[in-house]
Image (cartoon, rainbow, N blue to C red; front, side, top):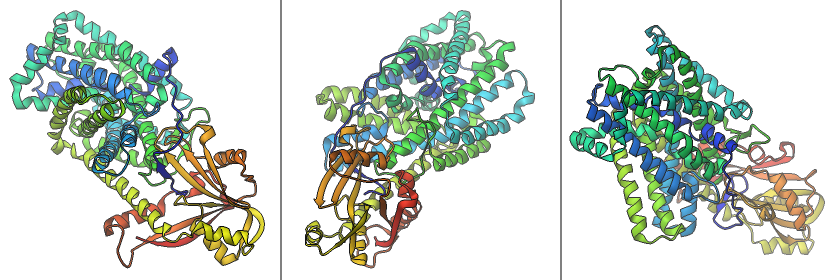
Length: 637
């Protein structure tokens, strides 16, 4: 389907090289990957302390710290760093890449494949829900630190957060290629500062180090019974940025992300949480955010500034991730075509998706204004991410069995451990539904319906259009017999269905009785791999004299520049003159079928709206707008 792109599991693949660990790569990982995880100490411990009444006993405080410590170790260090990041799709990560990896090994359209696809799509949809909450809770929690110095600033926290977030989203169209170089160093300073503050607290109460013993966590859960689920919902906030490790793997590399985690990020986080706990052991009646209470009074304002910068970086990473996810979903055929702009000629990952940006901005600003504080917003945070992590574990099991070819027993045992942890956090976050946890879930469900409707609608259009296509032999025979007059010029016809004779070409021959001297029918295919090697970019098939069918292939993270791809077709014997070629495509209008509708009415109306407003082929595929002609037609579904 040339206007929207087909997806296939067959094609040439260009595996991504494993990146080595360098200082620059480790810094990049800290700036891009660890913003969310790195700023979680701002609000996590305050939330779980409030969940137990605000003044936990020494034993309870150690139990809380032990829960956080072992959550970071099991979920991030073991599950994501060691196992999930091993399940790369030719160097790329993220739940959509994982979904493509496991389903490509199964093939077909069975129930197992459908279930795995559903898991991947719903997990991806939920990431958008997380994306509108993370910037709001992060920036609010940073600015609220000034309350440690003076309460007079409290009325201005929300307005200032709104201004910062508005500026962040408005600036997206300019890209972050220049200022992004500062993200890594700023986050490194952040991790050093929170580690030093944590060490200061530990020195005053070394007993806190006993929390490394997991028995404290087990004892806390056993003593509090079902009430411990409330606490687990707060503990989960410490790992909400875990998916970023996997999602950004293709951009940064597996080894730099792992090195930055074990060498810098994990030690800094553990020291920060331990320091906050030590402060509670020393002063059980402490009120306020223990993170900022660790800081000397004179340094609170500089710390608030640094925290604000760190949360802006965390927010930027979430926004950039949403843009990348949108591009993947579009090119895998699960999302309508949207305008995408490349904001840097040097960094491939620097893209801007206007619709997603403004939609996220509206959602983030509304949540910031509506909830008004990080404490209240923490109730809405976690439901989406915990669901995504649960779905990732299910897909990981299939990767173990079908990709790595592990036996059932070790696959089941390891996945079972991760599943128990994920189910515990998932159940705990369900308790937050009334506090706002329903918001990201509803958003995820809506986006899931949009994705599945688009995919089914495109498939229905392809089937409908294929019914009107001509047998290639008939047209070839007419061309060879000279019954179709050839006129000067070059024409490129876009084929939605991937066939050599699209309907648009038939219409021209029928109405004009002629065809250009050089004709190319073009099919665009998106592979379920990240990149396609240059020597396999275009496949050329000669149909008749002066008539070729060209299939152009792209990976699901590549920029689909058709002109560049067609240039490679010339090397395979297709003498295209792109400078004066005319491009022909169809502009379809979806209408109700008189008999035997292919889609339910509500899906048809939703699909028709998206189809009508999807970005045009010249804009998406970088075709010359002044040499692109569209033929309007109605498609009954």
